[in-house]
Length: 129
Image 1 (cartoon, one colour):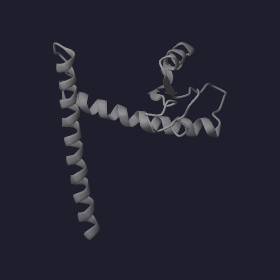
Image 2: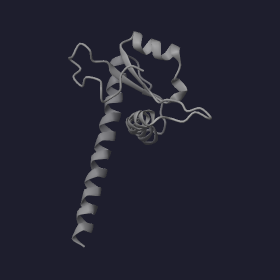
Image 3: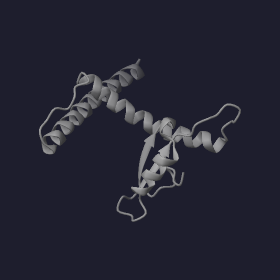
């Protein structure tokens, strides 16, 4: 793999910026990596371990940083799936589909904000005790 999150330029306006794509080791193949690179993406695929071949410390650190981001993204999609009852997006037209996805994201963000606010109140209350 060519780039890692800490080495990639953070500015999307930069000519060398490549948007990272995070995936687990099931998607690690030459075909997939080449296709992502052809489309100017930076593949951030978790490396696979094999029996009898241990990871180096660098591989462990790379997998750890990739897994943190991937895990957080999967959590968001899973939460949205549970909130909407695993509902299929049924719309006519891309504009309506984009609107419906935007509304789902808004609902998730509001629920997340409420959760964070409640946790802050609880932690402030326990600090006073």
